[in-house]
Length: 134
Image 1: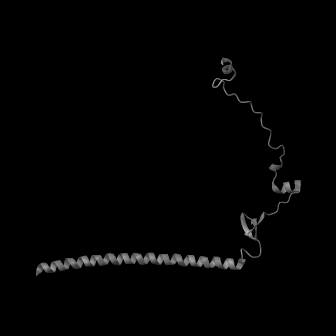
Image 2 (image 1 turned 180 degrees about the vertical axis):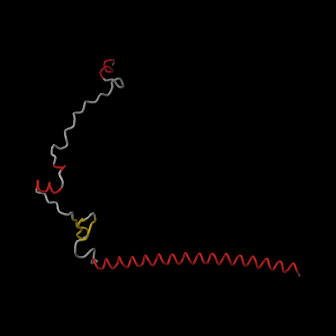
Image 3 (image 1 turned 60 degrees about the vertical axis):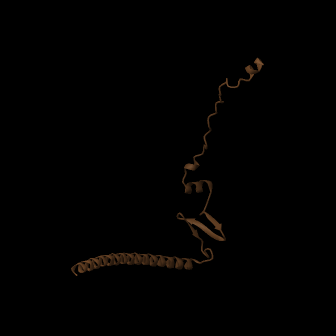
């Protein structure tokens, strides 16, 4: 039994991993340092503008934004979409104006209510003074 423990130490040995080999360079090519036009000339690659087709609508990526290509945009043409944007803007402005009017009316109501309470208090005081004289 003692021979078994000598061959298979449970907690006695220390962990010693193998030494890892040094990493190789990711790329020996310097093509990643070249700008796009030079790469296209050197390698003959013409990527073009990124495009995608989403729900039957073709989109292209230009100037940092996805733009619908000419034609129908999700069932609505560009003029209709522009008209809807303008109408939406008008409705938002009208909504803001109406909110402002409601705020002003609430302020006026608060002021009138406060004046009414002051007048009632003053009237009650006058009534009590008039009762004392009688």
